[in-house]
Image (cartoon, rainbow, N blue to C red; front, side, top):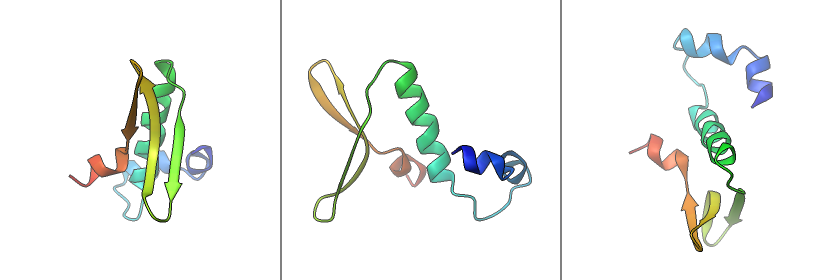
Amino acid sequence: MLKQYAEGIQLRIISDEKGINFGSIYENVVAQELQAHGFELYYFNSKKQGELDFIIEKGGRTLPICPSIWLHS
């Protein structure tokens, strides 16, 4: 994410430039918020079962979180 900021991502967003990977930006925001609230973050990727951007544990339950899905709904 830092690399995107170094490339002037703020100006690219403000100028409504096409081709910005908003999914990665959104995932980073979600990761920062989850960590700020004390969650340990885990990732899962399987060719057969797919990808989960984040897996957290809350109240003894395992919860999958895929922020990029929210962007497309």
